[in-house]
Length: 158
Ligand SMILES: [Zn+2]
Ligand SMILES: [Zn+2]
Ligand SMILES: [Zn+2]
Image (cartoon, protein in one colour):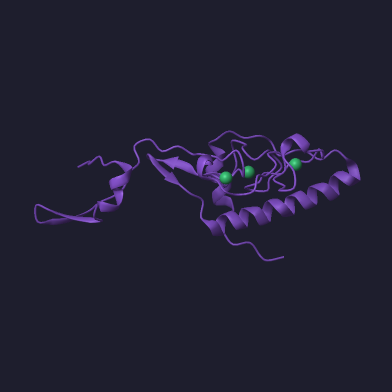
């Protein structure tokens, strides 16, 4: 059974409904969920309600924007990976599974950021040596989930 309710009436919808002698759980389902990304702070939220400090699209720094970005390095504001903030295979980008927007848990985001930060460190010290470090190959969207799962086990603290 599907009931359509306007967004404003969502809070009036009960969590359970008694229906033909059975208790049925009401599940919210957005009909057309979309991953929104803010072009100001690059977080995954509605840009119109953003009150945060703008971040650089290329490196995630708060003290400048991409127009004033001088360095050649790139760092995603979300996963800290070596890419602009809206790269398609960002491991912390929410995904849509069976019509439901699925967020990467905060603890997992933190784990991903730790790993990426460490990789960046290793990379920058390596490139200083030989200047010919292989870039991580660009992968398609299907590898997004495996990237998330790969870090779900806790990493040892450094
Ligand atoms: Zn924002
Ligand atoms: Zn920058
Ligand atoms: Zn990213």
